[in-house]
Image (cartoon, rainbow, N blue to C red):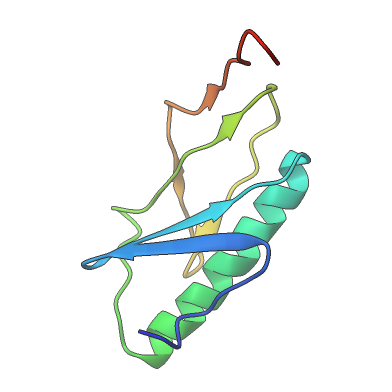
Length: 95
């Protein structure tokens, strides 16, 4: 799978038939936009290789230092479930 799309703004990890796309940025809106762009590229790649994605098994989880408005992500024109476990990450005592 060496032709799987990559981006300077996201990290893609695979294991067996699972794929995770990570997007980080201090601005949640930019991280969400980067995630959506990567999801679109991944979806186009999967279609080209005739790989079926399963939106019912796809999930978005947000980790943040501050509360933020939720922005939806789609895969193959279907909105991904946003985990109820989305959480605010506590700062360490030193920082």
